[in-house]
Length: 418
Image (cartoon, rainbow, N blue to C red; front, side, top):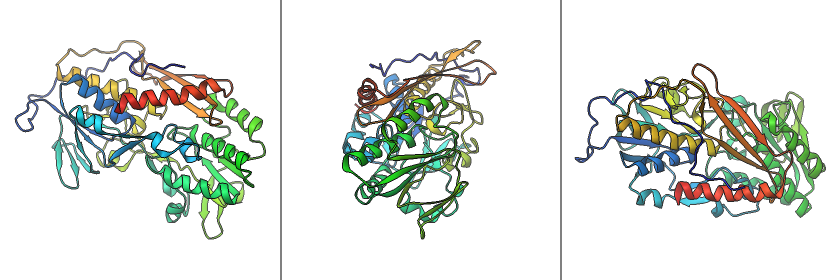
């Protein structure tokens, strides 16, 4: 399947508040009178915003990202399971630098909304508009004893954390035993990912003759989201009945590394290795800035925060029913970049009066290294109503979607960093 990464179905219409005229004057940097836009987070959403802003040429753009390079979480299960090297999913930020973004390799400690400044360990970055693409944080307190066991039980749902999970998988494939993978209740980043990891590790078990099993401990009654449940369960049954044990409706309460045992609502489960996918929330910066609690409170279709119309939150930290996926994050970043450029140009506000398309979600769940399930999510929103989501899902895994998944990833990485 060919996916044009630069096309978007959504119509850019925002509330009157969202596109209100700029306050008098934007401060200058070094004599440059362009408005200043700071983008925090160099992942899928942040890069969508940066590339869109640089293309528009209407602002001075600063990207704040502590990592020196980019690593994709989407598709990285192929690395975690040992099918592909990490380098296949890594890219340099060199192109962003060449296009004129100022890149600050630091962590943000605070957002000062009163002064409109982003505070790092060494500087205060003034902004006229702020785009936050912060990703997710883990709710470690949800499982008793997890915080103490963190180093031994990596989650691997943030960039570069996949390396630690890969080490666990490599050891398991040699030694065998019980490998537990958990799936929390939504919302969390990339709901198909726990099942995808289990599938690809199980494929390696079959190829290498590993003695043991993968136990999926699912807090949900079925694989999530519901539209993918049937093809996911079919993959377990048809390909990995000897390798995967599926335990739905089971909550993990505590972890004991001494006995290597999980205490669950269905009794104790011994394990040799475990990849516990924890419940998630937006990073603490959202709460520090007063932009929301578990997730950032935003307005659709603009992605402006409810607390501050000069701040946009995109990607997985925003609190709407939209899928927490890379494709939605990138599309949201592009949309926000265009909206900011229109605000800078002083264009007349357009108030949405009917149904508006939101960024398209495209996702893939690999069942084998070469076969996948394609998941498309189209979303719309009407004034005063919650978003409506429509899923289109492959009825079963297939080689066509397997090939399209990697082609999609390559195209998206080029759009971000090529």
